[in-house]
Image (cartoon, rainbow, N blue to C red; front, side, top):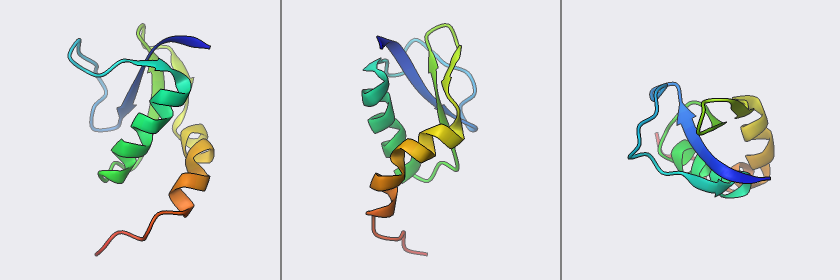
Length: 75
């Protein structure tokens, strides 16, 4: 599956032309990982038209091997 995908979060419900477009869902998942690493509670992947591609629970499920191998954040 290829196209233009966006990663969005609760704090960023709208999208703008300046946001990064990812060519594949896999690259969007890597972008989601980076956003989660910066402290977002949840993220999901949508296409350019705003159609939901992966809901937050599926993003976390697909990232779980990466997330579980990370060191815990400092409090």
